Length: 226
Image 1 (cartoon, one colour):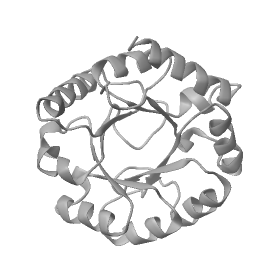
Image 2 (cartoon, rainbow, N blue to C red):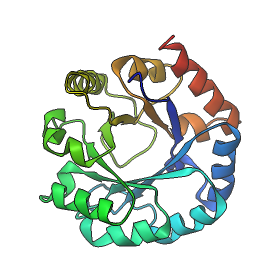
Image 3 (tube, rainbow, N blue to C red):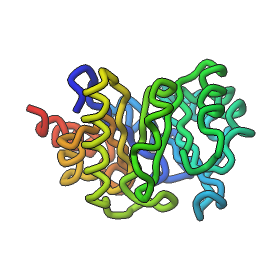
């Protein structure tokens, strides 16, 4: 984990009850989560369809948490303004989703919010090097996007470690986020590899007490850096 970053637990609403997203957000906040991770899927870039700007807008009215919006849509450019206006605090786009990644990231910044770049498990981390100056977060997917409840792909943590080393050598300090298969066992592994933002869906909202599970994940992850 980067020494100048706090450890962030970001519960993913993909695994929550879509009939009570406000309640899911409240549980995350009760557990001490700092961010909410919102997975936007279009049925094109990934197989499933989730929600759009109207849901983000509704959540913005109901929570004070940082809304970390992960756009699994292709192309993302036509939708950036709508999500920014809806209340997203960051928009993360996939390197694989547009041939004009730099332009998309610039547009997000122009909209007054933070920009992130994501890479799929089969994509080398090195593709993000040219845009590291344009983002404050790099999302290394630790499963293939589109479905919750998958097991973490161990080789993806090697990508996290390599990216963290590269950033340290060059004096860069983006958030490094992992998403997919994060639980009480894999959270410490991800932190030791260099991640400082852990997205957890099923591990949080599949538990009987999501708030307690957020606290447990934080404790397990924090122990890895003591």
